[in-house]
Image 1 (spheres, rainbow, N blue to C red):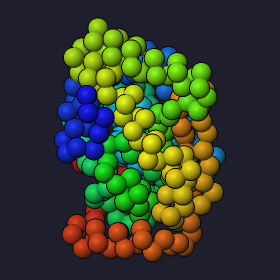
Image 2 (image 1 turned 90 degrees about the horizontal axis):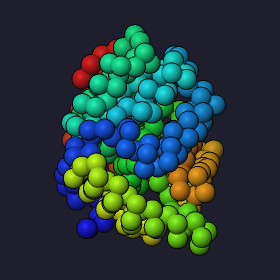
Image 3 (image 1 turned 120 degrees about the vertical axis):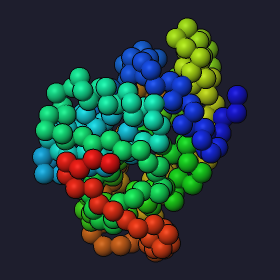
Amino acid sequence: MDADGTRPGFAVRLFDGASDGYDRQAAILSYGQYGRWRKRLVEAAREAGVDADSQVLDVATGTAGIARALVAKTGCSVVGVDQSPGMLGTARKNLERSPADAGGRVVLTLGTAGRLPFADDSVDAVTFSYLFRYVQDPAATLADLVRVVKPGGFVGFIEFHVPPGPLWKALWKAHTRVVLPTAGRLHSRGWHEVGRFLGPNIERFYSEWSVERLTEAFGSAGLVDVDHRLMSLGGGLVMWGRKAEEAVSVESTARAEARQAEDKPVVLARGASA
């Protein structure tokens, strides 16, 4: 199976096919580790000042797992953006069953990272998960994410990672090449495709985008106080930073100006729907 996840429409087809039962399968196939990574990201956001008065943009929100955790732990309001209608459908069902959506604090909307219809400096924080492996230019996508955050605001993400040690890497390869495809086949055709794709795609991404390069990209996009944690024996990555009080990246500014020349930005007020 082609390990390139950046082909037009690929991510939508992949995740639409796996949206049914996504949370249950993801928890089983990650041995419950995804919840730990999500918790660490939310902790970092809270430590950075995200609270009940904050508006957070959660990009690639999927089934709204991070959005719900943010509301539950900080009381903030969240706009969740995803390009998969199937995943957003599952997210809406989750919100209907979850008390974390009390007061309508999570709003979901269809959209694509890198072309966000939000004004500059319009949200207090941006979170995202499993995003960079599905975009053609991670640096340009990051620049657009940072653009919408207010100076001093939080930006953070979670992503799979390849364990650095030879033993754990060998076990990881066995898991991603054998366990994931086999277990996925037992659930559905869509999950079989996810299982076949993930391992090669994760390795492909990190062959070009090491943690060091991602850290440098954060700095080039105008983020400071950048930090990260490798979790679950190196199988997961959580990275975060804070938008500088003044612009530090000429490149990201130029990208934002070019985007604004084509798109009219809008602001989603708290409690509004899209």
